[in-house]
Image 1: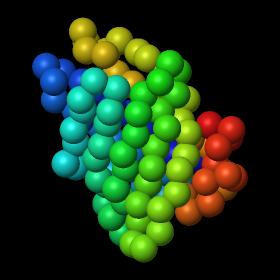
Image 2 (image 1 turned 180 degrees about the vertical axis):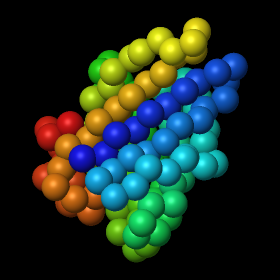
Image 3 (image 1 turned 90 degrees about the horizontal axis):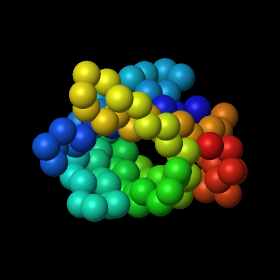
Image 4 (image 1 turned 30 degrees about the vertical axis):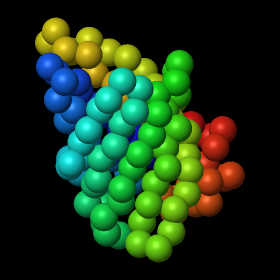
Length: 106
């Protein structure tokens, strides 16, 4: 399972990606309306995430090396010290499962 925690403060996006083996800060983060993109240095290398927030989900396209796959995360909104925090969880036995196995497990 992956857990994404995002904080939007004054148009700036920060956050972390956590898996069973790591928790790493996101880098190169951008947010524009419902569109979100960032990179993260995970134990297996650099992952590039791009997604769209829709209702209670974030649909991500993830690129790693020569592979790309899609996954869907459910979101949970929290207030923390006056800022909106978005925490999203994606289920799956591995970070590298094919998209059809990740979808619906969020």
